[in-house]
Image 1 (spheres, rainbow, N blue to C red):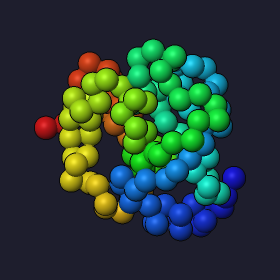
Image 2: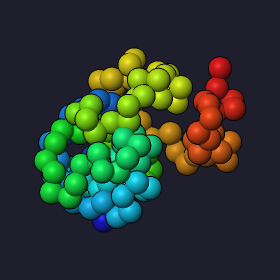
Image 3: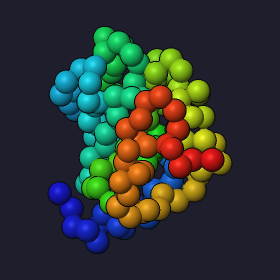
Image 4: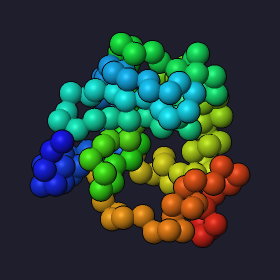
Length: 137
C-alpha cells in the first residue's frame, strides 16, 4: 500500500486509455469479481468482471501477459483497467461503454481526476445493470 500523497502523484500521471503491459496475478473467483493485474506500478490494477467476457473460460488466466488500458482511478488505491485485446472484453463492450461511460471516447488521453467519494446515487447507478445511472441525461 502506498501513502495518499504517493497515490495522488501516481493518479495525476495517469491518462484515460493509457496502455500498460501487465500480467494477470490473481483471478480470485472466475466469472464473478474480476482479475488483478500487475502493471509495474506500486499500486495494483484491477479489471472488473463486468468488462470481461460472459464466460469465465474466456477470461485471461493467471500468468497471462497482455495490454490493459486505464479505465478509471478514484480515491481507492487501485487502477481500474480494461483489456486492450478484444478477446478479453465482453462481447457487447461498445454498447456497454455507450450506456455506462458515454463520454469514454472523449475522455481518452485526458488526465484521470479524483472525483472524490461517490455519492449514494452514483453508487446505486453504478450497480444498476439495466441501464445508465438514474440521474444521467
